[in-house]
Length: 390
Image 1 (cartoon, rainbow, N blue to C red):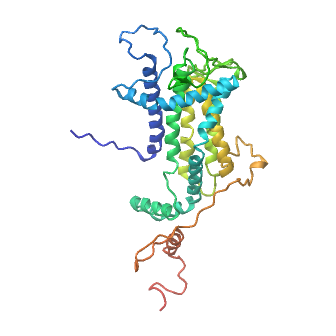
Image 2: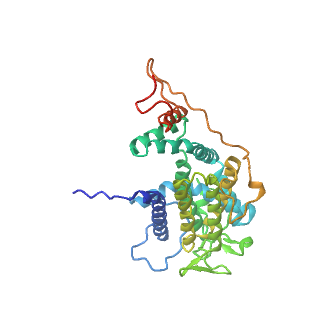
Image 3: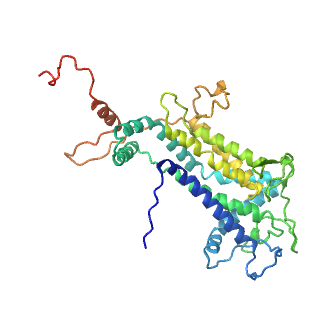
């Protein structure tokens, strides 16, 4: 049986990635919710209010969700132990989440730097890519081939920025479990014990209770409970009968700010339609997090805000302010002609090796010169209509 091939309109293809991200987030959140509410060995006819159980490692089961939970248990335990250690040190779970975020981002600094440098290099190559697109406007296959050749000639990979994103999504899902299931449990002692040794000295009640073992409220955020969704702020916001959290709006604002930094400054003389589509797409993920405020714990937003601030600092050192300003008509003097601390320069073209006697492969500059030489001048002068003077 053959299925008809769907014809996706060309302008809609730019939305496939964000839509898939939304689907993945929804599936994982639903799967995690269903997998973590029922204790191991519970009967299928469980009561509507199950008895709380202590926080233990996920057992290895035959279903895909159980295998995935068992595989990620060591990472969950490491992050949870560090989080509780910071909580024991500071006495504040909000500060502990921020410190854990810093610890998680330190090993990823080189990857995020490579992502930022690759993105900036592609922006510097944008004029050459536009020349290739103009030259091979009617031949899409040739256009893609020459575009890839330009990137290869400078040693730039278009997929260099994918690895940090692929790592960030699993860490986001694990932090969701750490905050929602770990911080709200009444007995976290089993998860803090490795080989019979208790790593963090936390005393929890031994009898099932609805109260968590640790204090999950953050005083400097108005008593915010990091283990529960936050939709009951002192000034509730409602959009289309859907409650909006204040901390979710702050998280979305930082995400939009970070995205504007990564974009190159607008050039009114050379409007780029792809840049316009990218600017519209960058608003999609923050909107997802805004409307998920009624489902996600507030501590996850603290983690994401801290992670975004770290990314903003790293991007500021490499790309500067980007196209952040003017912002709502505000164009501060410190952002004009700003030079980043570690600016990215366009690398020299790579001279590819070739066999003896084989013609040399043209560089990007040669391609641009060749494209310019193929354009005939409209001025004929004294050549006449029959051709050039011999």
